Image 1 (cartoon, chains in turn purple, green):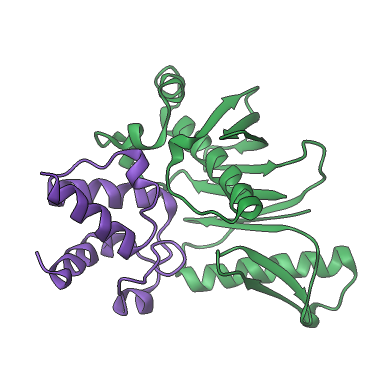
Image 2 (cartoon, chains in turn cyan, orange):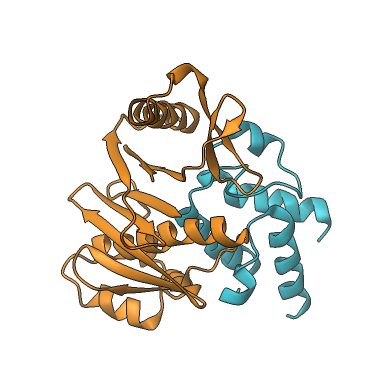
Length: 84
Length: 189
């Protein structure tokens, strides 16, 4: 999967939970889930579960710990996919 | 330092019934507490709001953000009072639970006086609600501190921590803001 494809998939996953349309439209690797997209932290759990389902991976809590930005989420997904 | 968190029980996620949700958020002991409670939805969000309020202090104290709710371990002392431990740190919590919402204020110092307020608005767009909340807090600070409302403003740090300014000078008083669904709340110490 290319970087752009991965970002596009993540974008679809977070869409139901975002509260800042502008930040969502300008979503990039630098985007922060909470500070930029204003995703409620309870919904961040839903995002993580949706990521697990979409990519058929399991994310341990120690890996989840850093997943507060698009870039960090991409790193974790790539690591898990590579380990499959 | 202080932190607060509110959860609208009507608009809060029912996602906790999803497989794996509880394991990502709660320790086994906390899950036992949830399963043995009469109102499970309420207990889920009570423990969540305790963690979230304590987390806000932790970020202020150590400048480190992370997303791992199981690292914050809750103990309920009574129906309203609790303790949240993060690594070697311990924070005190006081919660209000109603049919509509759960609200928690966390403090580093148990005896710290905190001015706090909760109010209901229509479920609005994020920016509108966020603005209403800030205006309410500034109005309250203006009255308590006897400072002209027009010179007060709120700015967020890079970590997303809100701070109050009098003109361009930071007021050395911690604040915390929260909203969820129909409810907003602020805490000020």
